[in-house]
Length: 303
Ligand code: NAD
Image 1 (cartoon, protein in one colour):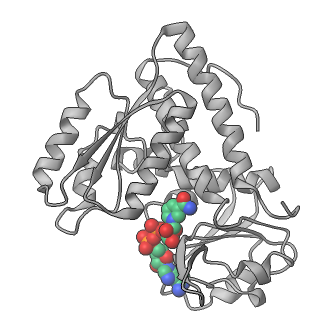
Image 2 (image 1 turned 30 degrees about the vertical axis):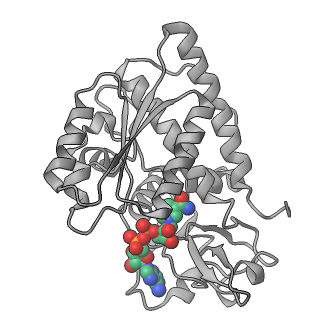
């Protein structure tokens, strides 16, 4: 890899090696392993690919998983009933409902029906609240934070160990990425600006930041004229574009080819934030398992 390109695959592999080690210690000490249930509603091709990748990587680190495939016409109430069964099933430590859901189902109703103690994505209002007010940890359990936000913070800290006082621009304010990431970075004393589709002066905001995280799904939103040699750029966007030869290609939000020669560090798409998101999903699954079994830190993680 070119030296200023942040290798997300490598960092994800290091994290997964640590998780695997911890899962194996727990198995030896207590003869138990974490188990995740993944609910997949309908036949969305991209969702199928994501779920298969999650299952495969869970297996690699010793986490058990079950996939529950549900018809795209399932009612919201029936889906909630499926989740409630998993909430009271002691053999399941983590529940993931693959998004997006069919239009007739309200994703918030589904997310809020998951027991917050099994909410591996960290999207439940109770977990969002704990992250938002910061440091609330009555039972000394780890707080479950959305995986993509954890992955972005990890990759930033690979380049800049101490982000206290840094000017960070997050573009995109969704509950999945921008919002939790802003709370996470603010807790580390960064000065965070959040832009969205109504923001008027994006170029100015980019030029006046030190770290840019783009999570919009807009191709080429960040161009050469917006960045400088001091910038760290984290590209969360995943966009499939059509090429002239009829093939397709995955790209992020950033005009990567024209920007990587200029900036201090940048994540590629694919191979940047994506692998970190899955690695942190597995880490969250392990944290839920430890919280439920009152198990403390088992091993120190290498970076
Ligand atoms: P979303 O649609 O919920 O939110 C998009 C955000 O971008 C909104 O806040 C919107 O206001 C903002 N936005 C849109 N156009 C903009 C513009 N022109 N200027 C500034 N802001 C703009 O999407 P999401 O779920 O947060 O996902 C965003 C992107 O990140 C998508 O491409 C998605 O596929 C990708 N994603 C990647 C990972 C990963 O692991 N790599 C994980 C989650 C999402």
